Image (cartoon, rainbow, N blue to C red; front, side):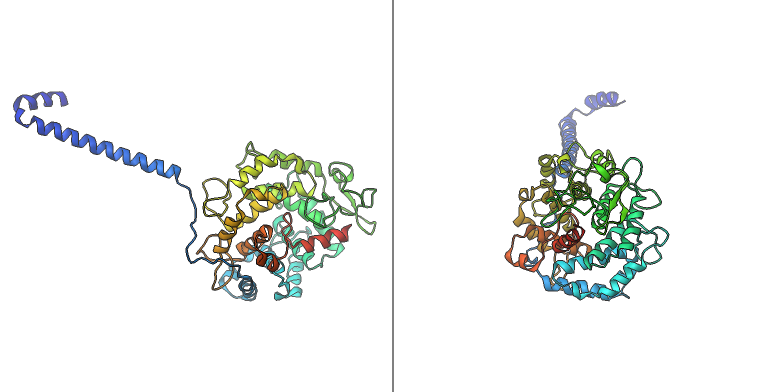
Length: 426
């Protein structure tokens, strides 16, 4: 039809032929230009670096006293909307607040007896685990937070430690993995939580020198109790979990430490990172959990430190902030997940510390105190703890170093707390 119409047009309207061809040329260019613009837009999207530029008026100094006031006020405002609506993660919220204050030399700004009473009331008697709040089901995440709170206050009774160890032991599956609760979700986060709980409870041999100054092997009533830490894959540590307490009494350990280590290793990817389960995408949060789990049992030799260190270093964006995986925005909490793993791997110097410190400081609220995920966003206790903890790991500024305690890169507790826990166990 088009060819017939074209023949008629050429025969009947020759004077208009130049106009016709100009019209075809114009339409063709428009179509090509539109296609080209779409292609350029797609190319720009593919090449664009997602980032959060720093505002020119962002804070550049550490507002430590404001952060103390922010956390103390948040904990005291028990009728606020934010406090009431966060009951489902209250135990972890208390851990975030308490640890941030402890790192800021202000642990006494929250009531110790009130917090300990809350923790003890959240124990689920039928299991020995802890829920997010009284009346909630027990979960491994909140059990670790409860243990971290109790060891910070040095209020962990031996009977409670035994009940908690029994609960954690019961969550290990035959393949070495751990489920978070009785509903069966499996995640490498839970592998870390289980190993960290058992180490803090004194039911697991931990690798000397891997966790920072003062961390020693737990006393097990055996010949290696005063030695260099022993082999986590041998003896009782890898089998039935028959640990021995400092008083010589038998106490519960993990069913299969070697199985737990092997499962974590199965979650390692070709890029050196770790995912939630075998075959899942590498993620900075999971990497922290897996690297820390291996550090606890002195098995970091299973990790390719250079390969993983490079993947972690590439998480730094032009703003100085760190993201959790490629093509994501930076977030203050990843300052902790990435830096803690790099500290354990002895690759902390592979990031631009000054640029990262600028980004973290820019995420402070200079009116209320507290840290947000990105500059200008709302602050919260979660990002406040991990912002403070990341600055502690960096230790770039003498002012910051004097204001913030050293933090343990594995347990995310003040290093003096971890030193005391393992000194007591030893």
